[in-house]
Length: 401
Ligand code: PMP
Ligand code: GLN
Image (tube, rainbow, N blue to C red):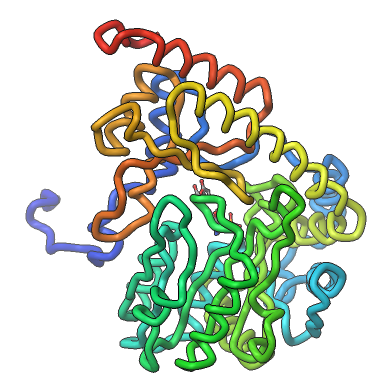
């Protein structure tokens, strides 16, 4: 006889079983359901350079198509090392100090798994990307939050002092910061450097948006601060650099001692990443670095268009210094919590966004929403036009468009 599921023992671990679907998938599904413009999930709606895609396609046909080396094809590891030297003067040995992963997501998971032991304390800066906490909990660490405060979302010495202690094994930082578009400045980076020097923590820097910084700013890897090289790894993503987010090619670089530990986790997580995609991205590093520069200029224009349009409608826009995203305070338009407002906008105005509270554990501010502007200008114009029409109606007349 087949047992009904109610006869079976409980299954699953609370860290995953107790979670819903990620907010990005939820809002993208709602966008499809209601025919809404998707300014929620952060993916560009135009694919990156054809030459990169062609290079990968040629490898798919010609080979190699079998397992590449566990740490990544050497062409890509060399390209990642050259890029770090060219942009930041950071010197990595491609043999021992660079590891290719299946997206930044895997680089972050392998770093959390490889650099901590159960019971270690990990500090996350909130708002935080949604994958950090579940993985940190999965590997048995005790997670503490350092909360940035709206509307400026600055890292302060006081907040660092309150969150970090000699018990902190690992600090995860993300700059440029998804979802609020902050690019940590020299003062904030020095505060972080001082705090980790004082307490002895290691640092994982999620720098997936390293090229997407606006208004002539420069992204500065924390690792370039004096004496941090030995305790820091930095994580990158080809998806963000070359508008190929579905490829899931990422990397982590840092001192050999830490990369060895991360590689040990990586070898049992994914072992490796499709060789054609790795070689396509290696081609991108050598021939297509003009792409992220041009993309940044386009994104900056999109940001400005969205910022002006949203401000005219009544959103209090928070300046975005980098990434694909900007956030806006919705208190001038509604008393609803952010997720209720986002669902209503998707359903009734035909524009999908992301509630910022999804980036906080245990209840964060619930009056901000995130807009992605890595979309065609015409798509942003259409979204603004829908929002303008929607908010120009009296509340009782706002129905499905
Ligand atoms: N970190 C941040 C801050 C992100 O926004 C993302 C999302 N794309 C990732 C990591 C994951 O990158 P990837 O798609 O390369 O896994
Ligand atoms: N990084 C993307 C964002 O913040 C989403 C990635 C995902 O869907 N997991 O929107």
